[in-house]
Image (cartoon, rainbow, N blue to C red; front, side, top):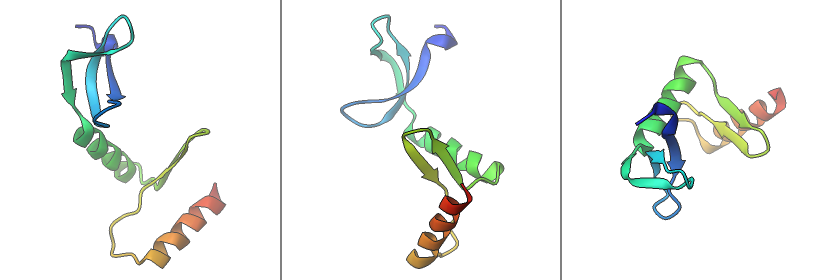
Length: 88
């Protein structure tokens, strides 16, 4: 199986992230897949930490924000988000 045929996709029914082979008809091959949700989330968290990032924008789709766990209050989180919006 070629690595080019392997994709990360979100399953429409379970909403899990799968690492799967994509068939010629652009559907997920149910015989060649594995749930990768935890791996993807862990890698994303590690990316934010390693790159000292707190925000990642997806053009036209939204913004993903990383808030370090320091016992922040709701008000502190809102203030942090407002600050990030002003910076970008």
